[in-house]
Image 1 (cartoon, protein in one colour):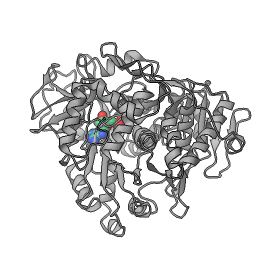
Image 2 (cartoon, protein in one colour):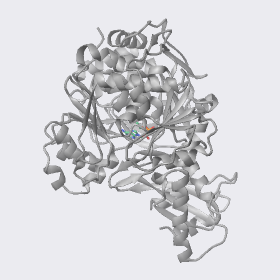
Image 3 (cartoon, helix red, strand yellow):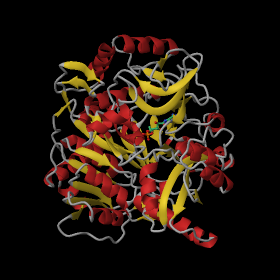
Image 4 (tube, helix red, strand yellow):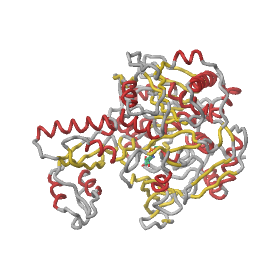
Length: 635
Ligand code: WTA
C-alpha cells in the first residue's frame, strides 16, 4: 500500500526516504492505487536531463477527465464539485454537482467537436472566473485538445502573442466580465487581438454581463444555444500518458513568454497527490483557492488536483475588496471553507484594512491556510496565523512554479512544524539542491545558493511549445544535469528551505511573474523614448513594484514628464496589461553599461531600492559617471 495520505512527521520522513530511494516504485504505487487507466504503463520513468527528455508512465492510456469526473459518479454524483461564488454577493452561489459537471463538460466537448476541434488542436480560453472557464478547460481535455488558458487581465497584444505562438484554432471567451464594481469588455479585447491572429477560425462566446457586443459573421457564435442542442455524453478520447494536456505561458527574463507544455499522466498523479497531502483534504471539506485559473495555481489547485480527489472546489469571480475588504472572510463564513489558499500580496492588502472586517465573521471552519506565489514576509505570516488561523490552522507556505506543475517545497500540515517565511521541506519525490555560482552543489546545512532540482518529478513541464532549445537553455544549462529554478534559497540548520527570490530578471509583482523585456519593449514604443530599463523595488503590498529608468530622445520639462509618465503606462497597459504598470519612472541621461553594452541592472536595482551602501566596483563600467547622476535624481 502506498502512503497516499501522510499524517505525521515521522511518516513524512519515511515516505520521503522511500521516494528518493525507489522513486519509480514510489510513484508507480500511487498511480496504480488511485487512478483509472485504460492501460497501464510499460515504463514508469525514462529521463535524460542533458537532452532534456523526461517521460513518466510511458505506454499508459487514460483520460484525465475520467479521473476528475466520471469515476466520482458512482460514489459522489450529487456532491458539489464546483461551488461558484459570483462577483456580486447578492447573486446566488451556484453548486455544480459531479453529475452536472459531467453533463456540462460532455456537452461543451461535443460543441468543440462539432466546430471541428480534434485531438492535439490548440484552443485558447480567455474567460473570467465563471464556471465555464473550468468547464471549457475540462472539455478540451475530454477530447484531447490542448488548452491554453490566458489570464483575462492580459491585454489584446499579450493575448494575440500567445494565440499565435501556439497556433490556436479557436478562442473561447465571454461578452465581458465583472471585476468588483467594474465591467470589462473581454470580447472587445479578443476582437482586437484577432486582427493579428490568422490561425483562429472560430470564437465561442459565453454570455455573462449581457452587453452589446460585436459578433463577426462566420467566426463568432454564442455558445448557449449550441450547448442546449448538444448531446449529454461524450466518449473520452484515449490519451497517451505523455500527450500534452495544456500549454500555459509564463514570463521569461528575455523575449517572448514561454509556453510551458504539461503532459497528461504525470501531471494528474502529482497534482492529485500533492492536493491531498498539502491541504489534508478530507471527505466533505470545502476547499477554496483564490487564484485565477489563468495561472498555474488555478490549473493545478482549483481544477485538476481537487477534482481528481473528488473534492468540492470553490471558484470566486470577484476581488478581495468588493463590496469591501471583508469579502474573503464573508465567503469563508458563508461556505464554511475548510482550506483557504491565497497569495501574500492579498494577505498584506487585507492586513492593512484593520481587524474589524475580519472579526465580523465566523472563521472557525478553517483548518489549513495556504500561501503561494512569492515569499511571504514575517509580518504577513503572523497576521495570517494570528487573525485568520487563530493560531490553530497551520500555514502551508508552498513553493513551486508554472514549470513544476505542482507544489514542490511545503510543510505537510499537522506533520511538519511550520516556521515563518520558510517553505520548509521538499514534498516526497522532490530532490532539491543548492548550488554555488561555480556550479558546485552545497551539501551542508546553513547555506544559501541557487535552487535546483536534481531528479525528475511527474508533473514537470516537458518542453516550451515550439522551442525545445529554449527549454534546455533556460532550465538545464546553468547547472549540469539539474533543473534550475531561477530562484535563490537558503537551507537552515534542520534542512528547512527558505526561498529568497528570483536571481534572474523576472520580477514578481503582486504574485504575478513579469519579465522585464516585454515591458521595456512596450516603453520603447513611445516615440519620445530612446531606451529604458526596468527593475523591481520592494513594495509594502505588492511585494515588488516596477521602477523604470527611461532615456528620452529629447530632454523635456517637468510638466511634460508627468504626461509622458501617463502615456508610458498607457502603452504598457495596451501591450502587456495593467499589472505591468510602472510605479515610478525616472527620466535619465544614461544607463550604466558594461563594456560589452549590457545594462547593469544590479546597480539600477540597488538605487531603486534605496540601498546604495554597496554598489560594488563601478569603475569598470563604460560610463561610470551616470551612476552618480541617477542616484542624485532617484524618486
Ligand atoms: C515564486 C506560482 C517564495 C518563485 C505557483 C517562483 C515563491 C515563482 C513561492 C513562480 C513561495 C512561488 N515562496 N517564492 N511559497 N511560490 N514563488 O510560475 O520565485 O507564477 O519561481 O508559479 O514564484 O511563479 P509562477
